[in-house]
Length: 402
Image: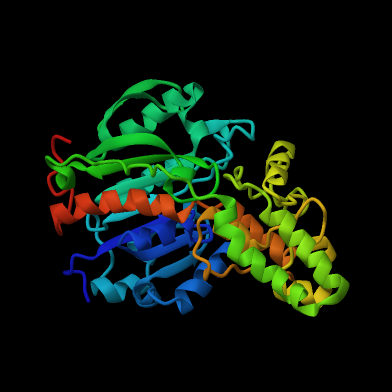
């Protein structure tokens, strides 16, 4: 395999625990670099790329970079991709640059400081677009970015990509931007629950495709599904498996397990509220604010914390806390990941010795902050269709007139 093959290559910044990377991989993209600043999430990426079936390309050619994206220099620092290209990455040959840039600057749950939030990485993403000049760009964020108060900022982002007049967020002065040669195909809010994710999780996604690639094609947004997948359908198998060891014990424990499992199975099901990752500054993991906790209770789930894994539950004898409370069972990290759309086999790292953080808390935060893989896959498949029709090329060779 080499660079002459029409392999759809990608680089992803702010990769987290791999939600977007999984979805894009399922859509046919092969990653050359996954960049993530959180040590636990970077360890998760490294673990799964190293051992997961189907990720052989990434094992050989993908750099897992644990670093600040502001210090990422894709044209000079990539190592494993050198073996793929037989040389450094060249401007205009990468298929896709993707990233779920930090949400807090635009989240309704925060102060919505936008460009004034030090965590705003849209400028860095756009600088990387200029540096790499990929065939396509995909940026994911919270739906808050679509609020009226950020219209001026969105116009600036689009002008950086496709050209036009916009207010410079640094100077506050309107100016004309030449653009980087892209067609912005839209900035659309997609609801995860309409793409096979049993959770209310609206995400704003921007797709831009270079004009050399797009040509006369029209990018089509993925079509939502008519039938939603419920929490009950998503978790019933794993929930039954968690209760089974106690059902097998007999006696009073069996009775408690039967009653608790019956309470869970008696719930009518429905769609989960939005999972949240929480802040490192504020305690351990739980499933959201008061309104979310009330919604989880209606689904038969105790949202006041995260359960130990089945192995840890047995070791710590925490079944009364994790499974038998009248409010319902707590979710394990694995079950929260299923609600987020992760494959059941995806593992999450979280070293309890680092930052004095309990392992399951570090793991859960990765899950709660993730981009649901099924949504990334749906959008990625539509981008891939355009790129495959266009075929292999180097874009931007005729930048005059862009």
